[in-house]
Amino acid sequence: MGNSREVVVTGGGTGIGYAVAAAFAKAGDRVTISGRRETVLTEAATLLGARPVVFDAADPVAVEAALEELPDRVDVLVNNAGGNTDFLDGGDEDGLAGFAAAFERNLKSNVVSAALVTHALRDRLAEDARIVTIGSIAAHTGAGSYGAAKAAVEAWNVSVAREFGPRGITANVVAPGLIGETEFFHGKLSDRRREWLIGNTMNKRPGTVEDVAAVVTFLTSPAAGHVTGQVVHVNGGAHPGK
Ligand SMILES: NC(=O)c1ccc[n+]([C@@H]2O[C@H](COP(=O)([O-])OP(=O)(O)OC[C@H]3O[C@@H](n4cnc5c(N)ncnc54)[C@H](OP(=O)(O)O)[C@@H]3O)[C@@H](O)[C@H]2O)c1
Image (spheres, rainbow, N blue to C red):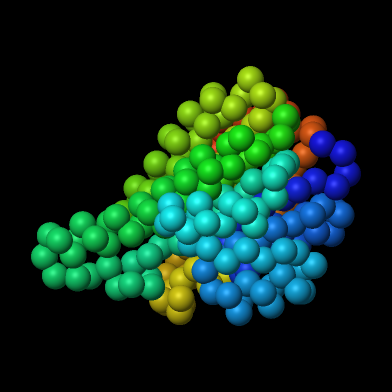
């Protein structure tokens, strides 16, 4: 892989994705970040010294159109774009049709997005490339359609690891618990709920974006070549992963 790798981080304009992108940039890698909000993305890219490519990772037409701006060779792909769409869109429309629409938004945002971008870049992945997808503790503790989507990420990851394994490519999920300094909750996390989540950890603190980036850094290193098809939990013990 050499010292300067081509890294793509979806949703790299804020939160965990930004911290992950910063870790790669600091290591001297060439970093491309994506997101839907152009201003947020270009400002982040300037700060990071990264390349911004604006596209919706959950929209096949947009992903296809973005391909010409994405690197021809990809050494590291971090499928980080996602979030609980119920926080943003309400998720409480009337009737079954509304319920289905909200459910599908979470599936699209979290699992279809990762699968789409990985599929679109499959022929550009270098020998020994690394794929990391950001899952969630919610896959194990429940959280409606968001938890279901993150659980699907874990199942999908196993098939990706199997498919690309013969090329020396690894695929793993990093599953964070509560992480501060992100836009994830869109102001919808009450103090009481936050304290409860922190109380569930063994180290009695929220995670940081750097906690997650450190694990992504390890999984994408040459040293981690035999770690694949796994879920690595970063949650302070709030859910003891197996
Ligand atoms: N924070 C936590 O406590 C926590 C815990 C467990 C898992 N996670 C997971 O961590 C990942 C990163 O989230 P975060 O916590 O860092 O929150 P965040 O600050 O909201 O970051 C999510 C980023 O992804 C981008 N994004 C979302 N949907 C996208 C799409 N369809 N196409 C392209 N970009 C998209 C957003 O930018 P645009 O809106 O501009 O597109 C944003 O920059 C998510 O997968 C989330 O589910 C977070």
